[in-house]
Image (cartoon, rainbow, N blue to C red; front, top):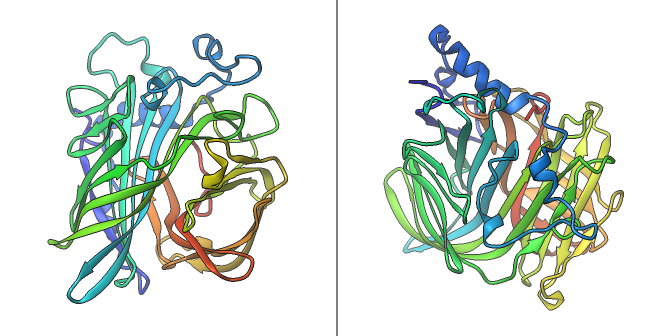
Length: 395
């Protein structure tokens, strides 16, 4: 069996003080598993375009993508890369006062081209990865963990019919108009119910989100903002009832990055008035913007969002933080200019860097942040994600 592909990975705890990471988590050399590790690398790094004929037939209908629900809530194994990305802001009330937390649970699916023709049931044709994290705002700590396994054998599954992903004891499943999310690492665990309060938000052109100047540089992408979250969260064995607001993204593609892109900056924000804000940019190695996009939707707009076109979003760094683990410098405060408003995005704590080199191979920053409008008023909370700062991102 592949030790890397079929086991859980011990979590790491990060603080805003001195580096306390455990470098023993980096995998030792495993010569007997070099082939499977190579196949894992192929699955993440191989050229992904052009579209396969079967996928291309579904791409356009009168110039627009055709998304069918609930089918497209599920997995798309004919596509090279896919993820379900759940984030949120939680509060707990206790005799000692209110505490705030951020949480993240992301499942990735990667198609491995080199194994598709293999007949063995043990062939790693689809790989499932998962990351989970909890930000303890008062404690100024980030708890996180990661998992990886080949799909099958009741270890890792991603349904094609609806949102139903499991990876050992971690899961994300839709039940009518709510989702259930569960994850546990050494030192933390959460079980949440997430109730829909708004319709699906189709990003880009009715769900086809451009990521570059060529039409094939795109992904299918929808969001479910303003999910109402309730459940339990435990830190170091202390369990708390929590409630809050969450955001779910689902995205799949044959290729995601512009050839010159090394990473991206992205925000998904639930505003206090019920609005939803998405903004992103792709960067080159000189930190110049290659492509931008995003959306804004106020509850009064119904299901249709305002879509931001290329050049309508501007990310300007204000303050940076340097990771003691990787020495990467991340902007943890931004000015983000959009057609909806000019916002300030501030991380609630600086150290929310995730080292996922033993699952997806990437080091990135992803964490709970606050959103302020052009008058300096707090108007929302959500997640900021920054990739490609420690090293160029290669999917």
